[in-house]
Image 1 (tube, rainbow, N blue to C red):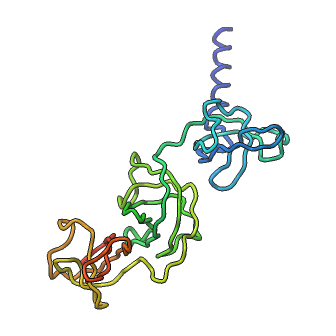
Image 2 (cartoon, rainbow, N blue to C red):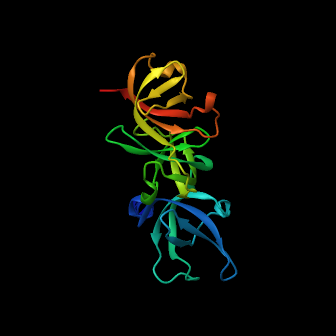
Image 3 (cartoon, rainbow, N blue to C red):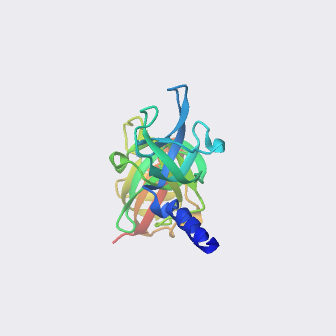
Length: 240
């Protein structure tokens, strides 16, 4: 009889495990909803709203980032704000909060991917960048969580879990520069007649005289000698 009871208990635990969840690995933000006396809801990154019945007290904080698995609860939610769920597993979302502005850049590696170059010089491999912002040269403002603990698929920069992003203000000139040129002591003499001063470490540049194809981002906040534009090279290969 004892063995039978233990077996039933084991089945009950499995039934509540992540494998039986209706929602899995959902990234979301805890929000305080001022309805029905006020309660803490969960706003998923895809815009879905949920009313969790068993959110742990230590996670009931406005703006708390979480990752959760959950099962739907039958019947209407008590507030009609979102769909009622019962959490199966929940944990704080890892990563370092990041807020800033930057430029979306199409980098020609592994078939091409959209990277994010922060105005502070940081390079990010963004995950879940909204499709309408995936445009070469698009200026964006964003918030997210940097994940130095995760190895990106391209090894271009730090993986960034994008929480929110929107178009930044238009600028008269695109910050993305792509073309061919010749490496010189100060940077790259572009075939377009412009001398681009580069911020990259000298050891990361080919020897002067090398013909290259390059993708770079303008750094208007940095002053170049004689008014020459300063750029950070994101990708470079020998010109054909």
